[in-house]
Amino acid sequence: MAQPGDEPAASTFTGKIVSQNGDRFILRDDVNEVWYHLDDQAQAQKYLGKDVLVTGVLDGRSDMIHVRNIVMAKP
Image (cartoon, rainbow, N blue to C red; front, side, top):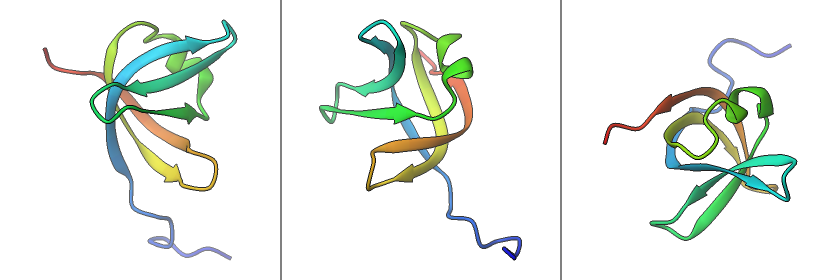
């Protein structure tokens, strides 16, 4: 059984939520020229086309962020 504190530390990722093929929402980071899959598609959809800060845990094997929170980026 997992103990509190066993989960990996969350990181913050910046970028824009874009639609991939019209059916998946991803975080596109133009500064670093990378993009990430997001496991919380419902929350990501609310920010389509917006610059955001995504807090979550990155699974490096699949480039999937396990989303904990998404907020609008400050201009």
